[in-house]
Length: 69
Image (cartoon, rainbow, N blue to C red):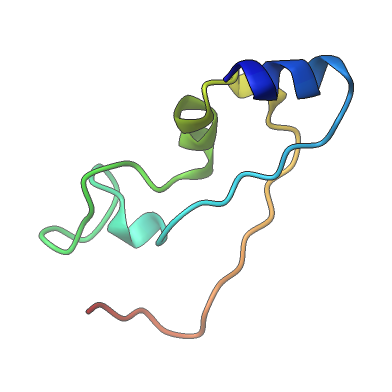
């Protein structure tokens, strides 16, 4: 967290990589095919330990179909 806070103070950009997708989210996903943590972009700040207002842009990559393993 300290490393990221220092980078933000210096005006640097931070790239956070999410996982899975919204259909795997425990609150908004298709139960029981969900994961244990939230996959939505807003929770990226929580996992990184930075304030949510620091997320300025979200880029989403989608695939053509939903699948599970």
